[in-house]
Amino acid sequence: MAGRHLYIIQSRSTGSVKVGRSDDPERRLHQLQTGSPHELRLILTMPDGGHREPHVHAHMRGYETRHVNGGEWFYESGLGDVPEDVWAHAKPWYLEDPDWWQRK
Image (cartoon, rainbow, N blue to C red; front, top):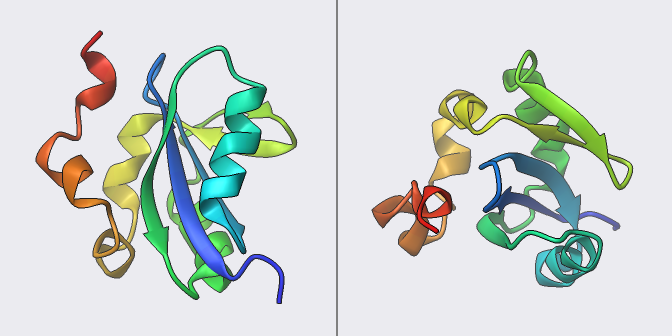
């Protein structure tokens, strides 16, 4: 089944995040990185959570920033509306340093 895993990728330039689903979130990160002049990092991967993408998008409604590469990007401030059970899958380094993108 396509899009089995939920992911959140964040941009260093603005902190904007992309919520999506993919069978291979690392590969998706590399695809997006190819089209971006700014560093991108995978901050969350939820195995078998791809079906949650529309739910997370609904929680982040109102935080949309732009459409890039065929997908929505959201302001970093929208991360506060991501459901807790999804946040349980955030990368440990991100939880320790959620403002990484503000440090140049």
